[in-house]
Image (cartoon, rainbow, N blue to C red; front, top):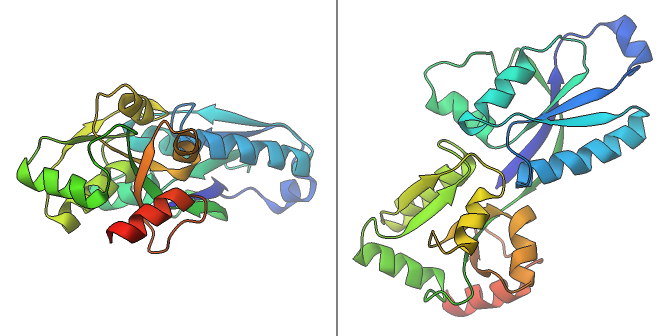
Length: 236
């Protein structure tokens, strides 16, 4: 599952909380425009602006699998006017890196869960892989030949691909990018073999016939993908 949380910089006082907010807020998104995180951020910003009566400006700060944006938000003034969209990369950084340039628990306060959804494993519609089992069989027969893109090293895209490799006993080549829609663009451009991507970006391409879904990463079938659901059932 990919999880999105809304957080804010800690320690704005009671006096300011009584009149909060009195000016525009900034919503930091640690990935480039066009990706699933950016889509969620802009939807959230619109609704927050309506609710709070103040503009909420999305500030994209990509880099290092989300670390650049997370660090930037953590080091802003503790006045409650800097929000941060936390993605699955946030806990991953704490597990992968020996140290972080900020304290992920002390410097950031969790506010609300925005949404969660599975990743979709997709291929091009004319791909020779009709099922996930066929893709796994090919990867086993040719270790390292198949490749998959991600939004950066250490991101949930990356770890999802590595988890698939570990669970299936296969070896695929990871091709990292800076986020945004780059992984999707690479698959549509036929430069990679498969895509593990959030429903936010995948579903429109699947419904339009530009991608074919092989499986979802959740335990349950996903109602928004009835065609993929039937294929999964028949090939299980």
